[in-house]
Structures are given as C-alpha cells and as structure tokens.
Amino acid sequence: MAASKTQLIQAAIQGSIDAFEKASSELPKGTASQDIQDDAGSNALHVASHHGHTDLVEHLVDQCGFEVNSQVDAHGRNALAVAVAANQPATVKSLLTRGGSATSEGPHGPLIVSACTSGHPEVVSALLEGGADANTTSKDGMPAVFLTSAMAALKLKLPGRENEAQGGLDCLDRLLKAGATPNVSAPGGFTPLHVAAEAGSERMTSALIAAGADATAKNAEGQTPAAVAASWGHRAIAETLLRSSAGDNRSVDQLISEAADREAAQRQQKATSQIPAPEEPDDEKAELLKVEGNKAFVAGDIEEALTAYQASLRHKTDAAPVWSNAAAAALRLRKFEEAMRYARVARTLDPKFLKAWYREGQAAEGLKMWEDAAAAYFEAHLLQPNGGTGELDFAEMVKSAVREGKKEFSEKKKAQEAAGLS
Image (cartoon, rainbow, N blue to C red; front, side, top):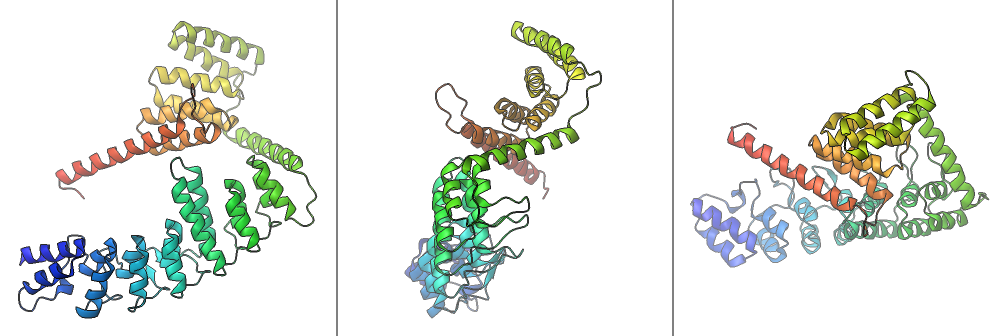
C-alpha cells in the first residue's frame, strides 16, 4: 500500500491522469484516493493544484470525488487557496467553475488579498472575474488596495526585487479598474498615494490619481502626498501631485525646505532624548581629543585612538563623526557591542551619515545579528544606491547578511532536530 500511496502522489506531481488512475486502482479495497496524503498533509488535488496541472485537477473533481472546498491540507488550505498561493491562474479559474469561492479565505485571510500582496496579477484577475470584491479588507481590516500599494512600494526599494514590484503594480491596476476605492488610509493617515509618493513610483502615482485619489489628503503629521514626495527627493512626483492638489499653491522647493526643517526638528528632538549630555562640556577639548584620536588611528594605535575618542565624547556628545570614528576603532578591536552603540548614536544624530549605517552593519555582523545587519546595510543602500567603481556595494551586503541569517537558522534547526528538539 505504501508504494501505491507514493505512486498516487507522484502522479499528481507529474500531472498524469493515467498514472493516477493506475495508482488508485492498486490501493487496498476500501481506501479512497481522496484520503491519501503526502507528508505535508496534501492530497492529490492539493498537489495537482500547486503544480498547475489543470487537466488532472478537473479529472479529480469531476470523476474521482475530490472536494474543492472541504478538503484542506496541513496548513488549512483548500485546493483553491493552494492554487492561489502557487500563482496558478488557469487552475484557479477551473476551480472557481467547480465550486470554489473567489470570496473565500485562506489561513492568512481573503484570497484576493493574498494574491495582491504576493504580486500575482493574473490570479487577481481570475478572482475578480469570479466575484471577489476589489474593496476587500484583510483580517486586520486593512484594504487590499493599500496593502497592495505598500507591498509593491517595499519591493521597489529592495535590491533585486524590482520584477516582483512590477507584479504588485499590475495587481494594483487590476484592483483600481475593478472599482477599488483609492481614498483609504492606514494608521497614521497614510493613503496609497502617500505610499506611492514615498516610493517615488510614477506609475503608481499616475494610476491612483487616474482612479480619483485625493492628492490633498494629509497624514497624521499634516503632510500631503506632494510633501512626502518632496521630503524623499522625488521632485517629478511632487510636481505631478501639486498639479492635482487644488488649493495648494506651494512650490516643490518650498515643500523640500519645509521637509528639511521638519526633519531637523525631529532629529534634534530625538537626539535630545537619546544622546547623553556631556560630562564636562568643552568644545575645544573635544576637538583636540578628536584630532589626537585621528592621529592615533592613522598610526595604527587603535586602543589609543578609541581612548581619545571616548575622552572627546565626555566633553561634546552631539558630533556624529566622533561617535562614528569611535565605532570604527571599536570594530578594529572586535568590540562589536561597543561599536554598535557608537554607530547607532552617530546615525541618530545624522540619519544620512553613510559611514554610521555601514559601521552599524559591520558591528551587527560581528554579533551575528543578521537581521540588524541587513537593515543597516539597506539604509546605507538607500543613501548610496549605485555601488559603482570605488563604492561599497550595499545591495550585495544586504543579500549577504540575509543569506548568512538563513544559513545560521538552517544550521540551528538541523542541530535541534538532531537533538530531538522541536
């Protein structure tokens, strides 16, 4: 019987109706093919749906008694949810004509939301044609149109994820054409148009405006989408949004100036709350000690350099370069926790300080804090995206940190399994 079970699931993987029928005929009397599952709790219909074998899927439902809705795998997914997750639009369409519901939910919420945030436009179209509501919300009450915009914007920023982002933008187009309301907001008052403005996506911005998005909507900080675009340096987007903002007569340069003033005020407020006060305020002593530290560092006396930087910080604590230099010295001495603390103060004082983010990433790597390393390198990548000749390739550093994190997780999991732990 074990062999017949294996052959039956293998037939579903291959999509062979003949092989499935042969394996099914060899099952012990009284054993239903619908009840045969692989190690992941998937029956033949789930497996065939995952692989997009539509002919076999139709055979299993029409001729073999498999149920589209009631039979679920170990993850709580019916065949339609499996096909949606696997981006199999033809199979999704077929299952919808065989009792599947386009408005149904999977373990993570409505299928239309899952398809949109995964960037599967053809599946989204199939679900919309099957009756899914373009204004569906997630389990947490977030509108699909906002989540789709946010996920596409995130992927636009991530190195190597541009193609996935285009899939998300295609999903957004389909939602809007199906009547999704663009004027929805998330906590903080951010609308999809704010998201598009921050991402600097001309395509997303144009699609939302064409669908009637309100360019004058303000977030919790009182910023319009145009102001958000300007604060992120997306001049062309800001100009487009201003043309659609009735009553807003500011220029892009005014918006940029306002954003700079707001950022400076926020940075000062944050720094005041997080940066220690100098023990013995004295700017002149601080400068002399910084110079001593620099000389010692260049001479290779890293211990002396770190001591000088620390002494400088006793007299003046709002100089980001000194904190960053202290981080560099601590890194050379493999004092990673110290280095991370110094680097974080430096980038708090100056969020656009490239070296501070880089050194925070290095410190996190030294501590094997891979997520923190990837996050720091990503911030550095946003400040220097090109990675050209003579420049550090921060995009590759992000990928490397993610790879190391996955590798460490895998090794820990194997060790736990070997020790009989869960």
